[in-house]
Length: 183
Length: 435
Ligand code: FES
Ligand SMILES: [Fe+2]
Image (cartoon, rainbow over all chains, first blue to last red; front, side, top):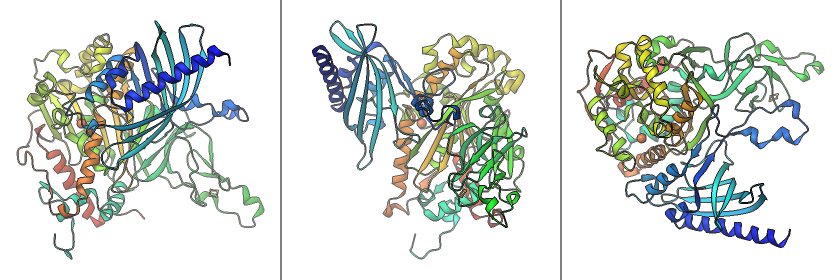
């Protein structure tokens, strides 16, 4: 890895740490500023499909993408959001009567395994990262989410923003009351 | 309740169901009985016909806690069997859906056709007295019938036809399932999530509890909005037959088509104003399929006893699979008019997954209410405090245009009727004819 790469790696990791910190501190309005105005935020649903027997013996036999329902007219992804719907969720957290946020979410995000690919467009990076999100609701109502994020980060006048995010959770049957949190 | 008192169904549900005991939602023995008397005896929703198109197409689901494979057989017929090997009980199908000729059990590799027959026992060539394969097929769901593409199964061989079971609920189901020129289709796999609540809580909510909208969901639905006024002015809870329900807005005869067309409300329109044209087009011909009265009905929530729900504006069918008194595995499918252009479907999807399903902003509040109601139902010193289900008691009756018992959308008669039927079935020993 060249020096530049290490700097870039550092820069992007710091971006994610800051993002996680803002979200855990419930500073969602600050966090919104880390998103591109044209952000595309999706969460495919995940199921157990029948595997293609022709591919047996090959890695493609277990291709992750075959388990995902990413947005297309023929699928039912769990989330597909834009800046408007994300902001709507963020605003709700500060209302007295948004009962999903009362008491407010106690969360802890750990982001790691950050892998960067520089795309043809110099101003954009494809970044994969993994996360563990611990979520504590009422009393002892506690949940752990694990998953992957496939992002496109855009360098916008020297400032990074998330232009695209795909969140892949590791459940078939979801064991939490909501996957509407910010991942 | 004094200790030693023998609890009967009338202690759980009083005679007019205006009071419901908390144990209905929590007691293990109630739950065990429900599996036998409710889930093994009624028609249960399995899937929609659009999910099984070619011979060999299959999907897995549940009837109560019983794992089921539903398949379109190579004989062109529908088959539903219990997903459990006759040898030692392992599931023979381990995927959510697909297309197959056979299912091979992992343990000793007995194999079964998608129709459920045992087709091969690899060990038989080493045996002098091989097993009689013809008697060792997967246990079949003995009754399968469908209405407007909605496929139901029952373990009760003697159950009335699905047609009779639904009765006038067919009128209400038609409002959506027969509204569109090409019918509807289910798209994609269901979303599945576990909630720490009794299975009846989501069912009851979506059977007709429209009244909670601007309260529980006040952060999204303002009490003074047009949508809420419309519900307050025109909202009705209709019970075609005890246990089923349909909450809808019955719009005046001179309504603007925009006010009665299906799907024109909600976020989808903001995302794609172009969908208006398609939906108004549908509205023009709706009366030819569902009648003038039907075309004036704008649905809200529907339920088919015991555990199927449908949300009108949010394009979603759901089933509440019981997992013990305190847990439900909730399944939710996205449904659309089949002939809608792709961009209209995608816009309609926003009304589903932004608001309902596991990431839904409204549903995360509903599920919060259900899990908290479950917790509330377990409070030991509150066991003598039955829940009040009497709102609107005696205020429902016949309606000049709509079938069944009709009350205002604040009338909880849909829930009272549900629990009266439930009480009957829980008590009716003769109903048990499942081995
Ligand atoms: S358990 Fe299925 S083959 Fe033995
Ligand atoms: Fe609700």
